[in-house]
Image (tube, rainbow, N blue to C red; front, side, top):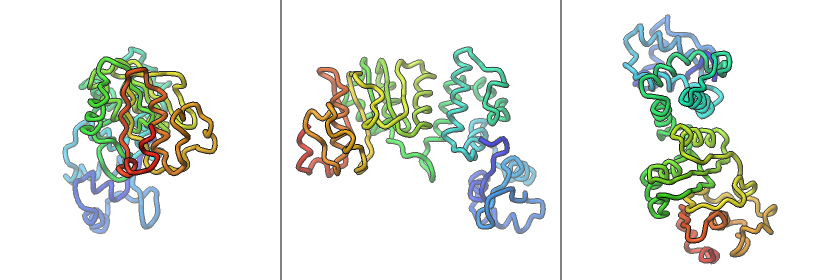
Length: 301
């Protein structure tokens, strides 16, 4: 995260609640409109603080909540909003645990936002502050990671009957099914996610609620982070149609109890991965593409 984050014209429009054309008109009409500090001629970037001040002086900046204002800065982070939010989440977790780091120990790119982060945590508590920022991060929009809808995650968790047991999601994504499992009363939640930033965020959400378990980064099929661990329920929304899932390396993997999954049907590899992690009597619920039911190999596991 940069200490002086920048925004594009489209992001200025969202910030001010206007159309993109209005920003273009402001640049032409007002000589004091902030000059670009980066980007290209076709897609210039502006200093966020300068833009906010100009909008405020012109009476064009809507009244933002503290969480909205903080999120604007995190969303403008060039290294990615997920990385920025993970840094904030780690700080909030340390604060919740009474391990608040000294200012010099905090990521230097984050220090400029510490007063706002502390104010939001004072108002809502560390968990509530992270939840508010998480909601903005996970809202549908361009460039946002796809998230399993909460109502669908709740349905899957309900079918798996995770209440009172341990649950695993080997393709955790943004953690939707793990959050649903916590809402349903699971006793421990484990997950693995290929995207390291998303894995951190899902793990921070669990840690801030003091839920036993963890979310580890990595490829579940090629490098299972929980070998030998069995749980009461596996709930998963695996990626569809990824044919490069590791068949060549995993041809003799002991997980393929029902036969080696075809290269073109990776969803069946995820099914057998889930079954390999179930305790006797456990349940696995996976979201599958409709075509899987009609494939010749789909009835195997």
